[in-house]
Length: 76
Image (cartoon, rainbow, N blue to C red; front, top):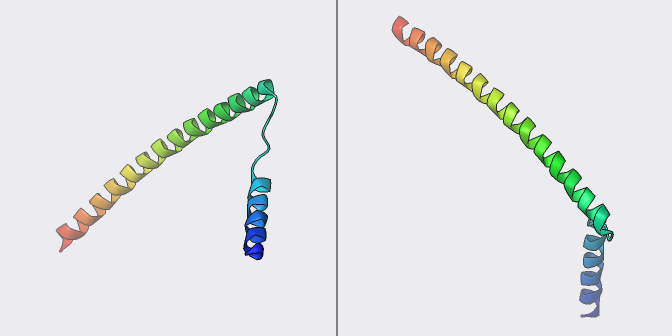
């Protein structure tokens, strides 16, 4: 039983150490949140752009496949 408790405590301690450091200063914490929010917005816009580009590329590929498959079917 003592070994189980010690192991549980060890795991909890490891998990706690793995957590990111938190700001106890409210101003610093708000700045960090604002920075993270700005980074999130930037990454979201990049993701939207890349997704739109991928959709266009997929449309081109599908159109080319349709043309190629139609040509093959008509040759048979």
